[in-house]
Amino acid sequence: MSEQVVRHFINGEYRESASGKAFPVHAPEHGGVVGEVFEAGREEVDAAVAAAKAALAGPWGQFTAQERAKLLHRIADRINERFDEFLEAECLDTGKPRSLASHIDIPRGAANFKIFADLVQGIPTESFRLDTPDGAGAVNIGHRSPKGVIAVISPWNLPLLLMTWKVGPALACGNTVIVKPSEETPLTTSLLGEVMNECGVPEGVYNVVHGLGPDSAGEFLTRHPDVDAITFTGETRTGEVISQAAAKGLRDVSLECGGKNAAIVFDDCDLDKAIEGTMRSAFANCGQVCLGTERVYVQRGIYEAFKERLVAAATELKPGPSHDPDTTLGPLISKEHQEKVLSYYRLAVEEGATTLCGGGIPEMPEAISGGYWVEPTIWEGLSDDARVIREEIFGPCCHLRPFDDEAEVIALANDNPYGLATAVWTENSSRAIRVAEQIEVGIAWVNSWFLRDLRTAFGGAKQSGIGREGGVHSLEFYTELKNICVKL
Ligand code: NAD
Image 1 (cartoon, rainbow, N blue to C red):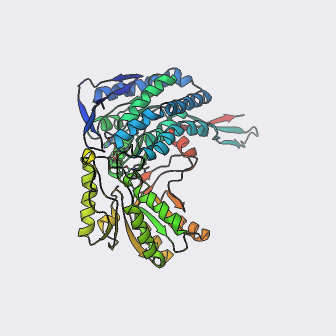
Image 2 (cartoon, rainbow, N blue to C red):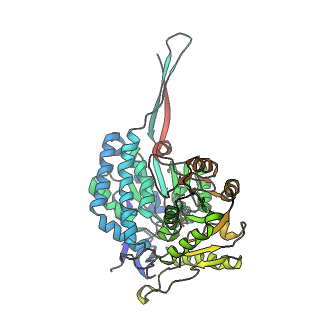
Image 3 (spheres, rainbow, N blue to C red):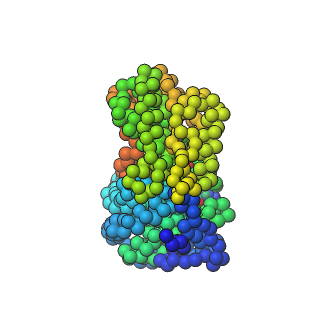
């Protein structure tokens, strides 16, 4: 395949960096270079922010909510018409199985535009009647306007889906955006620029600058004084840096960060469902899902049976090339990430774990042996304060630990600095709700995982983030609420 040259998308046009500075993009599947990406300097970031600011004062600022919704529907339709190109780009960047990207990343990425377009129109604002001493009264009316220029900083694990999850509601609410996609996965964010032009989105409404974080596009964008709000998905420590950048000028910030999520499997669960769900939550996307499970607590009575079945299923996962329909496990995103995950595999053994399966690099055909592969791995026997139990690994691995009762497992699940998601497996609905209510997370699933209704709140507790997006919560973040008080 010919090498890709990835440019910024600013004010409706693709542009190279004035400095000519660029960095290579590697295919996780084989490790080879498949393209180069221009790295934005201050000049390109300034141009993108200026374009986004100007667009607010241009025709985009005059669009009604209905007109915006119509345009967002067109964008979603156009992504679906160009489905194969988006799929190809996403799979090249991430190496994930086509079967996964074609069911999750691309369709959900497109749907984010439609769903938020419809959602934000249907959410009412408040109105209060106030009595006044003269008897005439007053009426208060809530009014929402766009927040302005929004910086979107996105990660590499679900590139299109997590980016449009922010761009969709931001545009639905009338803002303009500058996206800084992960340096690992620039392709689909860039391709979306073509779709914006094809659909007639006014220039400057959607902009993309490529680059790294510190002392690069990410930092220049988040520190830019004309950015009105920042929405970020990524690691907690990056979230802390971005939060500091947002403090200057008191800009609003939404942070969706890391997790070290627990699954809790009670002995009254439907074991088939619990195995199927835990297989997905631990190994989907090669374990690179913020909501994924890395700690599995299983009630003692079914511990051995659960362990046997989970290990058997994990051993059957088939790593392989993205296009092969039999592939059920892709590679990790980068050499650096592969080294990080393997360092945790070694650490687990040093910390006293018994490795039940995996623990290394699988043997792969020569053509893809340079890819960033790791084996799906399951451990048991670690103490609760082991680093492997406490730190986010973000790989296809989990640790099993037996427990005896509800109080014990709630304490274990909560004994972690993160608080993103949990999955509780039980057929006893009272217990399910009782336990879910006590787990310190933003999202608690019962007998499912990754089931999302976009009208609901999404975000993390503790070190997993600040703020909520989704439904009315996205409207809160992407609009400025003003009270208009009318004395009658
Ligand atoms: P990351 O924090 O390394 O990078 C995310 C983005 O931030 C990238 O675009 C990066 O270039 C940019 N960035 C890095 N440093 C920056 C800086 N100083 N200023 C501005 N931008 C900067 O995260 P990642 O490795 O791409 O993604 C994996 C992480 O994301 C995991 O921790 C995972 O749990 C988390 N995640 C969370 C959610 C969620 O919804 N809570 C979803 C997906 C991923």
